[in-house]
Amino acid sequence: MDQSFLHSALELTTPGQRLEDTLARDSPDELLALLYRQMRALAGPRQDLDDLVQAAAERTLKALERFEGRSALSTFTYGIVYRTLIDQQRWYRRFQRRFANDAREEADELTFPRSSETDLRELERARRLYVALDALSNEKRATLILHDLEGLDVADVAVISGANERTVRSRLRDAHKKLAEILRKDPLFDPEVPA
Amino acid sequence: MNAADLARLEVAKRAYRATQPTDVEVQIGVRRARLAQSRPKLRRSFFSKGLVFVVLAIGSLAYAKPHALGELVEKVLPRPDAANAKGGARGEAALMTPPEAERRMTGSAQGASRAAVRPEPASSPVATPEGARAATPEAPTKPTAVAPRPATPAATREPAAASKAVKGAGRDAAHTALSTPGVTPAERATPPSAGAVSDWGRVGQALADGDQAEALTALNQLSESDDQRTRDKADLGRAQLLMARGDRDAACALAGSLTHRRAGSRIERAAQVLLKSCGR
Image 1 (cartoon, rainbow over the protein chains, first blue to last red):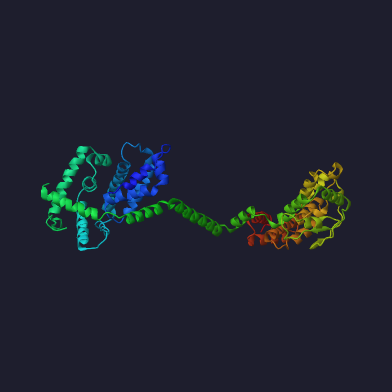
Image 2: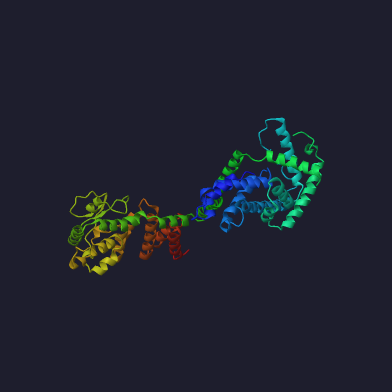
């Protein structure tokens, strides 16, 4: 994920000013963009993505006072995004159990330039990947996305998810195992198939 | 995970990166989030609920007790007759300069037999300088209604009795004139003239004099007023006066008519009290 805008946001901080004040006043759009990308990465393309981003933004603006700079700002916001998503999924599961019988709504149409047959194939692969990720539990899914797809190391994932590093490794191992089983059955993920 | 699984994972990573949101998509999402955050949801919902509550409360009050609503409005807004009786005189006196007040007081002491000039009912509570000039004896007046009044001994009586008899405009004018720095103590002792007395003041003055016929005449004039509340009050006064004079039938008829015309809770209550003494 490109986080160059984050560095520029951090550079906005002057010695006399606090980081959260600077971010909230001078670069709220960059903070929202960071939250949007992080929520999009963790939750995937879904209809209530905007609601999730708004909920995460409200939490972040409230929690910025407590940011002490012991970790990177993106790790701090990732933690908020992760907890917001987990809370929403738990609520949604309870809501569905009581009030709704339908299955989860279909994922949104993934949008990216469809210039060739290769792009269409990538789009179809991405759809199937998100379906496979939905088969994992929320914690394992988030751990796999953060570590394998977003490229964060285990320590950062542990900070974000508020878990022990060993727990993270355990979740990662289980997620790899489950995902490999699903992808093994899908011919579209066969490495022999040309990209 | 074996090598084949790792290769599949690499393919999945490539597909994942290919579907990452573009900058344009992120900007659109950020704009939507900002718009939703700046929307004052709570305040709007409370405002609409409060508005519905107020409308329902006023509507139900107007439906259940229309008189109560009317009385509430009358309490809030100044009444035209009260404005004529009190506010007009007060405003008149407030606009008077000290020499004018002195002249007026002197004139009222001298001309006790002058006719009472009644101000226009539509005049505003704060009298204009023209109105003040019209009330002064020296200025040429254009009275809309002149009620000729014989000379009463009230002007020459002792001040305490006169001030007690004259309620309303005369009292306010006298109070203001007494506090005027240009008035001498001898002039202060002079009672206000009958010229500044309103219709209700005439009733009060006639009652204080014991002249019930004059009071009844003044009440009869008031009962022909354009204002319905003034008419109702005058009729109530007439009924009470007639009852006091022993004319029971006329008093009971008037009180009975008051209870049927929705005159307001206080007037109706007084009329009911009067009707109790009528008997069956």
